[in-house]
Length: 147
Image (cartoon, rainbow, N blue to C red; front, side, top):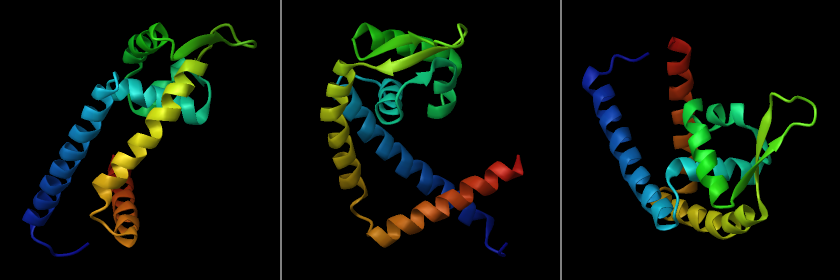
């Protein structure tokens, strides 16, 4: 630990919060323009990249309360982007799986999302991005260990 002034921690908090807010607003606008909310996108992105997932575990993987998952899955299923699939081995388990329509949608949407994030972060060099990743991981893990 250092003997830094307490206001440095406050300043860091404010700067992180403002940066997160701006990035969040830009990505949320992108999702809305494409007919999704951030949670719907997170569920689709998880299924798109990781394959079918038990409904009971989706909330933990995208940092969402489990009660909200049913609502989001219902909406995405209603649009034909995902489907529910019963487990062959355990009747208590139901999976969410991305459909062909959902995959086609994400094949078009995800690269544009990646490009938007690249543009938002291009102010930083590759080295600065790597440093930020390591520093934010360090911060997050140290806070988690305080609990």
